Amino acid sequence: VVDSGGTVSAVQGTVSLTPTAPALPTSKVLLASVFVPAASLTLSAARVVDKRVFVGTGGGGTTEPGAILLSDYGAVCDGSTDDTDTIQAAFDAATAAVTAVVLWPVGVCKVTETVTLGSTTAGTTTFLGIRGVSPDKSQLLWGGATDGTALRLARTKYTEVSNFGVRNTVSVGTTIGIEQGGNTSSDGGTQALAQTWTNIIVAGFGTGIQAG
Image (cartoon, rainbow, N blue to C red; front, side, top):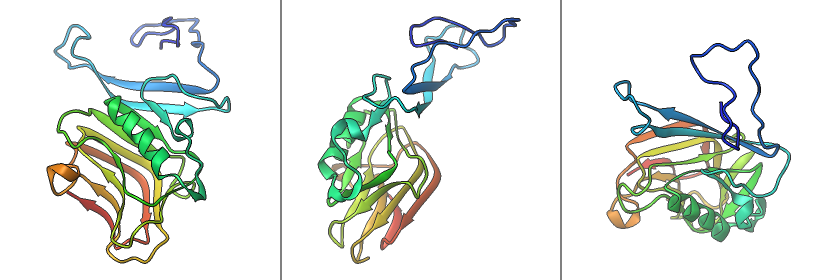
């Protein structure tokens, strides 16, 4: 276990009679799962495969790598304000970071145009995710055209969506809740190599989740 200053307080595989807890920030804590191949004797081949960010009561912006807060980009998420531009700005920041998790707040974030997480260029993003509190508390609300798509997840090696809901407020029509990948390279390309979906609700659309 390493604190935010790099001080080691515990090492896996060692025994300590008096282990100490690391000094962690009060607002947000980033935990990462790191994969190291069994045959590797060094950390040169290690890669981060998952990140979990726990948000406390401290509020404010985030400085931890991999954590993107919608509020930092001006999203209101009150169910009526159009948050399309602010959410897309947060998604663009996550995509540019290559490895990132967008933390969805407790609230209903309305969009009227498709918001896209990921790149249309294959191999440019490693891990991108959307992580909410629960699908009934952290929601994306579609208020656009009756033939539109609310959320598009474009090319990335690993994609995770958890504790998240997507709802439609317009006529069902041919709406799509979540599109994973796209039909052509111009609209998102092929799907992620690996995907994890946990505790998701998509409701009110012509098609809930569409792949590719």
